[in-house]
Image 1 (cartoon, protein in one colour):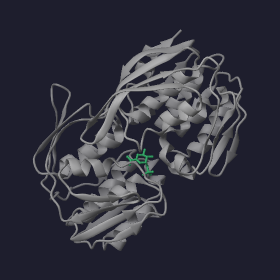
Image 2: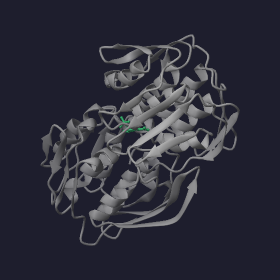
Image 3: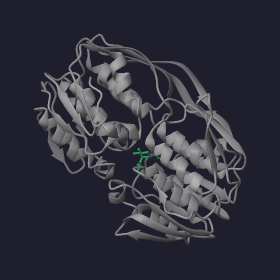
Image 4: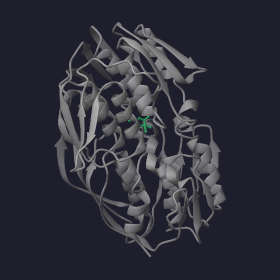
Length: 433
Ligand code: S3P
């Protein structure tokens, strides 16, 4: 593999072998950074995400008055504002991060002041109406730009609501909970599909009381948060690229240690098992209510089978779908994805880009509004891949390239740093040539 920043050449390999420990989960790091910055006292986090997205969250919290220090031992230390942010002089720059913008909007809606949130070109195309609706129902005033960022919040005292989410989204759920945390009365969020519950677990770790049922979460406000010391588990959505890569090659074996295995995030392990990969989970333990463990994956001798990802599964696996689709052609029976329309409004239109790039590699693939069909038993050739500024597309096609014939050029490879700056280096370490 070559190492220019913006373009990477990936050559075919014979397998994947070795053991890895990955940087901290992006979703959990966002929450720890945001809650630590809002809490009273000084929090310290080891294995905090090294991605640019979480750096955006930390710099926004700094602009709001929190103090962030990177300690010599690699930990991130955050001294919080004790429940009262300062109005920043400038717009808060959320970079490429939808999580930062949507979750922080809830935090700020209940604070006195005027806050403007901006993002890069990709984030400025993503739907923000979904947070305006509940926050306005709580009494906040939000001004969007044609449904998108830049957005301005006139924050202040809110009223509690009972909100049923029309689209499954952990970011929207968190947005409402963070506003509810600061609001008198009980705020409830209802969801038809249980989305990732890191906010619920993190809020409790920071001392908040929440009530949960199978399809709702309620927070009574106002409540104060208190600093914590925590280790962030390895990011399973980053691990996904390596797990899929190992599963692709008969006889491959990979171990990923200290990996976050929260059940709302670990669906990929079930899907890989359904495809015939050998999956083992060892050393399971709980850290601040987050499950952490070691995962072993082996590539089956007879190759991968077939799987359909639809319904609730699609929502729970949403970030892993590009990686799964990218290995689809190499399975025996293909991969079918539906009910995944949300993929079209991620950092890029991930359905369109996966289809375009699979076709560039010579694959047959059918595109649908809410998913795609990738027939199995195909041979792909190297091609020039357009990552479209999307980290997960850059990494997914680096995995597809490992089994193609000839070289693949990943254009826009630098976008991997949004979630996983170490990706190419670690990939290089575990491939067998
Ligand atoms: C995230 C939730 C998901 C996911 C994103 C991170 C989170 O987005 O795709 O990468 O940390 O809450 P939605 O809330 O839009 O589904």
